Amino acid sequence: MADERKKVTIFDIQNKKNRGEPITMITAYDYPTALMVDRAGIDMILVGDSLSMVVLGNETTIPATMDMMIHHAQAVRRGAKSTFLIGDMPFLSYEIDPREAVRNAGRFMKEAGMDAVKLEGGRDRVEAIRAIVSAGIAVQGHIGLTPQSVSKLGGFKVQGKDAVSAKRLLEDALALEAAGCFSIVLEAVPDRVAEVVTRRLKIPTIGIGAGSRCDGQVLVFHDFAGMFDRFIPKFCKKYVDLFSIVNTALEQYSAEVKARAFPAPEHCYSIADDEFNKFVASLK
Image (tube, rainbow, N blue to C red; front, side, top):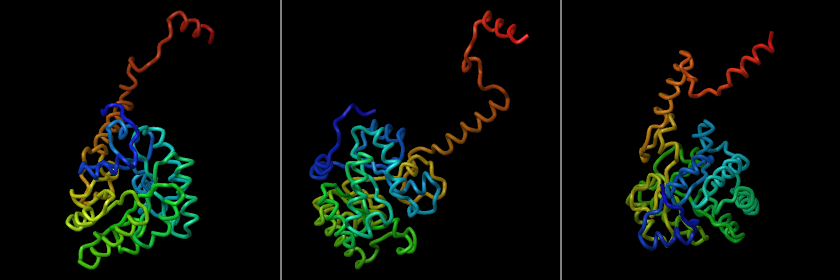
């Protein structure tokens, strides 16, 4: 467990890039997970709209709403005292109008105590990003595979695999940096392309399926912990198989209950013999 530490800030994140020190980031959606992540000394938590899939069981991230995101972000904020917290802006919370984007970003700050927000898209999101940053809210960009646009992309596919799309990816990254993003997530991008983007940017890149040369890495907690059974992307490493561990424990619990082995005497409360006898006598 990490020693008690000061609150991580944007300056800490930027200084890590400047020093060449890798940045750590993972998603969380509730109090106990946030508490564990915070105590482990992870730099950043993303309250991701991936909760729509890994927590709520939807097929995509699209069904996530602002109210859902705020609800989970509030729980994460209660558990994480030092980690830098980022609220993921859900589909249609920022695309329609810059003023609406600012209002929704502001909800993450006022109602959930987030330190920043994240939104998806390249140069087409510059206006919204500038508006949010102008309102005093830090923004993390997200390019490459953008799950909210999965229907337009034709599925969960690697982006930037040819020279034209790789150059467009770099141009998007530079546009987001110029708009005021403090960092950018690169998802499902060839490692050599991600390395070029990382070198060209002054702000940190956070990779997920983008190789080891990004300034930092992020994983979805349920992929990391083996708790999502639908599919595991190539870029994920399962650090523990909690699904199997918990499933085995549940089977043991069920068997012990059926055999009346649980609860055992050590799990029960007692009453003094004389008090119990009085109680029984009172029933006659």
